[in-house]
Length: 499
Ligand code: ADP
Image (cartoon, rainbow, N blue to C red):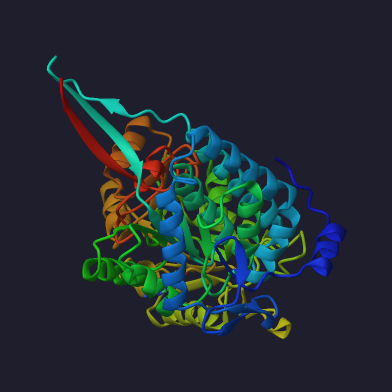
């Protein structure tokens, strides 16, 4: 799929935009039962975009009851999987037909560059849904190798009511990662978008209905984590929650599950990914291109961001120069301008957090070699320039904590074992990348790096065909993407038959 990046079309779409602001419950938009709203703002201007329904536990109760009753009568859970495939493929087509509108919504609500929304978020959303749709009628179950007296069937069943709690950095794309396999398996689904970025998910709800997902199967409940999210975590009628967000909220969800119905909790909780550059690497230009993309893409608001550059001291200076040159080419600006590559951070509080870490990096004695400040403050938006610290000690806060901004920490090393130790000396384990020309080193490091995804001689998260999820504090419980994503939303059952 290719969507053209045409400035006129972007602005024409913006003029016509009417953000949906109500919750989406049982096939129709509706206000929160309590009538409350919250304001979502445009991070590029600091101005309000819309007042959106602020749901709470009463709305969760209503949605769960509707979702359970839809599940029980089989209107979606028991139809031919080929039908679910067709409906979800139609959804992918509808998203494609409305891609410009969704991309503009995503950009004004999150501050991410329109060029990224159009060339990454939307195509990935469409591809993810289509890929999981195709699997709906292609996943076979198993028969156990029993004696002739028995038949042992091992098969998967949908769970029932599934919850998806979303973050604000890739709202549509992460919704698709969860909606695709959860609906393909026949579950009912309740989605809670992040309070900072509800608009694209609310529009998506209409497309889900238009595609033919029956009433009662799919719900979107906007609102705060402490109200809607917490109520979902505690609800005895929800069988599984797939969550992407902070480790702190991940812990809260596990506790809520433990204190209620032991619902399955699937967590993807951020990272502090190393990019390890060994001395033998010959193509430093390629390293620089990937390393720059890796720390700056999506303003650094990306859980796999390669924000720790662990580089051999002999190539450090040359690589730093190349990364600095490339970083300066990443234009910080109006997210709706197709030339912009770094948009606004999500909100004032997050801007302060990122600037706070930059301040801390200086205080702790790292050398600031690029950027370090807020820019375009006159816009009212939350922009930070590309920032690089050198001589970072892996014990410093800027090397340990997830900053989620355009900040790179360069950590020099002398020998390969030290590099491996530094790379793994982190509480997180989502992704790691590795640069070497030596095949043996590539394999040894790939095995020993403690991360759910290791990319070699590139920065990558893999793609829809490969499972994605972390080790250590980056999460557990299942994987997004790949065929494995379908395991998250199904229960495995054994049927033992005496012949
Ligand atoms: P961040 O700090 O990056 O915003 P959060 O983990 O707070 O990450 O948010 C990710 C998602 O989790 C959001 O949709 C948010 O509303 C939700 N959330 C926050 N707190 C809770 C909670 N206690 N229970 C369930 N969901 C929550």
